Length: 215
Image (cartoon, rainbow, N blue to C red; front, side, top):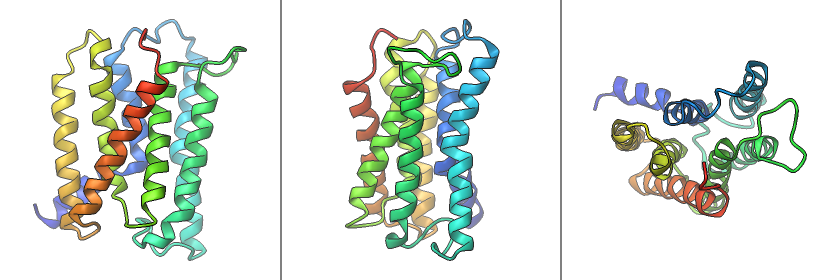
């Protein structure tokens, strides 16, 4: 792997893009699940998810960089990751609470157990990474792509779509992304393995503890 490829895969599988990829995977695996949802409700829901998990956190990180609270946009220093972890955790948790099914359903947002479970898994993964950050710098890139792999794995039994190629692509993505982060000297192999652990456990816990298997 050369430097250009390593940087390319680091950008393609940047953690901030993972919620978007998760939505696209869900739409492929469950193409008829949301056909009854009004366009306005669907657009508002997706807009809120992407704003709270991608746009707003990205703006906050940009501000932190401008204020020199973090050294770079990758937040390379372990001790500087504490505040960004808390920011992402807050917005991921708010996203989960917004879209999870409730007794008094919202007329504005789609409340869906499937989307909520995936967001809860991502939130738990961040919690684990935040805790482990006290000991070493976790590869959040690897954690993100492992989240995608686990979503496909855990939901593949509930869909009629062919998921083999998705499993293969996401599995390859884990290997390529982890290798890229090591090649760029952004992480050690141990830090990559910890990222894999966080992504694996986060989605597994959310699936077993929350997700309605009647999807």
